[in-house]
Amino acid sequence: MEPLHELRALVARHCLAGRSQTIIPRLSLMRSDVTTPPAQGLYEPLVCFVVQGRKRVTFGSRLFDYDAAKYLIASVDLPASGEIAEASAATPYLAVALRLDPAMLAAMLIDMPEQAAGAVTGPGLTVSPVTAELIDPVLRLVRLIDRPCDIAMLAPLIEREILYRLMRGEQGATLRQIALADSRLSQVRRAIGWIKQHYDRPLRIEVLAEIARMSPSSLHRHFKAVTAMSPLQFQKRIRLQEARLRVLADEADAASIGFAVGYESPSQFNREYRRLFGAPPARDAARLRGAAIDRGVLEQSL
Image (tube, helix red, strand yellow):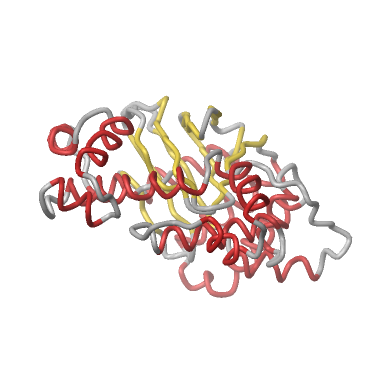
């Protein structure tokens, strides 16, 4: 069987709907029998291979369309809008995602000393062409789902091969930036991590720059290059996405949720919520429930 056909069959058999975390560490499968409208989400650092159908991601002013001919890499936790642009019951959207492990990437750099990290800070989401050399280890990794006794020994080796192929490809510089603790991308990741953990607190750029070990001007420049937004805009997006999850869960009234995620003004919270999601909190939650979109779907990144 041709590798891509076999991979489609495996994903379809092991993932009946939505996103499914497999028994293989960091590996998940996705399936949708219908196209979906754009949905805001937080994309974690990973590589995603669409094996059937098509996905569209909007990141800042950039628009990425990718299918079985391309793979997507997210190098940091990043708010973006994603939609399944091509899917049906007969030919569902199918995808494989592997969460990136910085420790494994760093260990691999020891065996690849000739690979320079590079100083350029690029966007946090990119797409590149898929090659036969890359799809082959992805297929072998997914095959291990049917052979659990082999996972502990073989999965790390195959994962390492996938990362090696990626590091030798177009996105190699980005992956090396993820691995190096003193790279600009890693410094931006530290700032992102702090914002995610303390999104409800006031944000002072000087303090965030100190956490990232950068000057305020350098942090602002590199943060925007990676995320397509400033640190304050990033914090606002994280606040609003967390608020949406709380609104959908019906945890409290909109004003209380706004205060809980860091807003001091209910009117500002409602205004910014409406601007991002297209409706005020209560109406947005009703619309989502009517569309049978639950908390798990909203938290799904790819």
